[in-house]
Amino acid sequence: MRALVSAALFCMLAAPMVVADVLDELAKKNSFAGSFTQRVVGPDGVVIETATGHFRLMRPDFFWWQIDSPERQLLIAAGDTMTQIDWDLEVVAEREITAETRSALHWLLAPRPELETAFDIEVSDAGVSLTPVRGDLDFLSIAVSRTDEYGWILSITDLGYQVLEFSLLENPAIAVDASGFNVPETPF
Image (cartoon, rainbow, N blue to C red; front, side):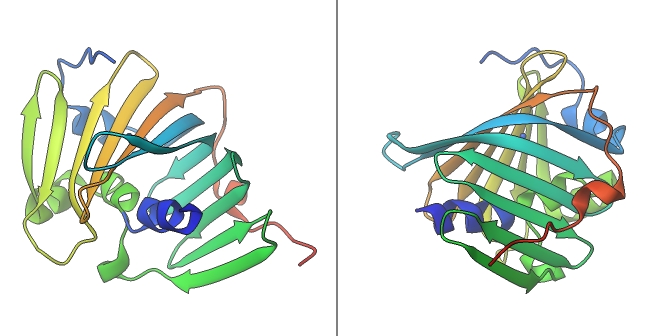
């Protein structure tokens, strides 16, 4: 399950208080960071797995996702390379990121015109829903909403109709720059 969650995370952000288009809000951000809770919800609505950790995102294509519990993992993307470190299994894996393997999180950092070309976009008071116009992506939809000034909800529905639900709590006190996306040394 750990590999499924990690792969789905990368092969892909309560009661919303959205009035403005959350994609416009995201477009104004060069970077943001904070903590998260992620849940994997099966097609039957049952929660399969829950994890917690910390994240950093920075335009144009930097991604740092640290899972602290229940298992310790780190996923880092910088440029065209994604590195996954599993501290518990003592494994490091690296792969190339291509246009075809772009994750849902990478799409959220894309410029609005690019999103409008790749997705049918529905904006509502509850948030925004993105449905790919191409059939070659690894997910069926992305929904993004705000819960408050620093809270975001991201739901990604994968091809198996599982929902990866992320509650992100943004921490504006965390300064994000490219040096924060260096892959750490490991003893394995």
